[in-house]
Image 1 (cartoon, rainbow, N blue to C red):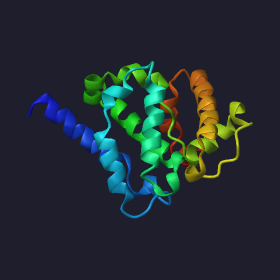
Image 2 (image 1 turned 180 degrees about the vertical axis):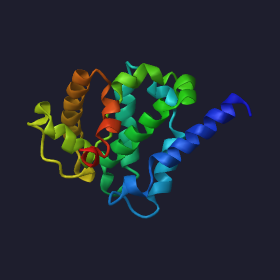
Image 3 (image 1 turned 90 degrees about the vertical axis):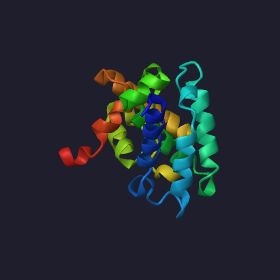
Length: 174
């Protein structure tokens, strides 16, 4: 198998595994998962690798994906993209093929109730808006949560994307 075919197969795998029934629960309609996976699979990862344009590309991709979802759910679209970008960046082959190491510091924590709860518990997060759920997450509230996540991550000496794996199931570890 040549390297291009391997990279394409790995991308496809991550597009499928990024959005499963548990990740998308109560956010989408039946049949939307396949549309979301196809959207992720067709993303040009190389466009995300430039730090100077990363946020613009992420915002455009979020808006495009949100239009495929019921009621233009920006928060759900952003969560799906952030999970996918985290996963592909964590993969050696994709990271190398698309230069994703350049954007690791820019990646956002995928927002959900686990992340919101953990951020709100931190001193930096005391002023965050009440968590109403991913489907109600606005671009403005997301930016506030991401700002707090960046401060928490800086204190932990990691990038904010890695907070996701630290926060995931944190209540079960306590």
